[in-house]
Image 1 (cartoon, rainbow, N blue to C red):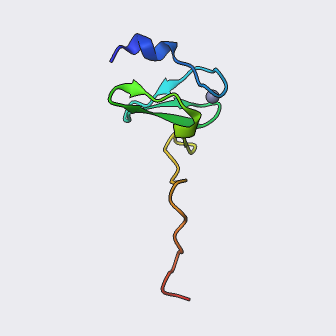
Image 2: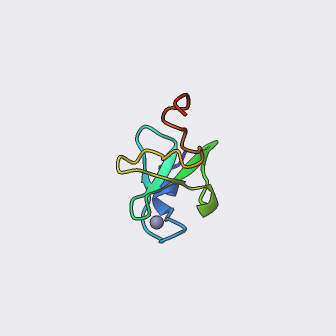
Length: 74
Ligand SMILES: [Zn+2]
């Protein structure tokens, strides 16, 4: 896609600059630690679609409930 378009995009939450992950189809805001998915080459700039990121800019499994560590040890 047109990389100049990405340069024009800012975070919808803080209006700060976004960074594109080199390995992923995602734009991230380091200030908010949010990642905005890129679907079909189009960045989804919706806070409701953003995913939380950890310190390594990896998406946190926030959508999945934390599984019990030892489900068979009740
Ligand atoms: Zn932001």
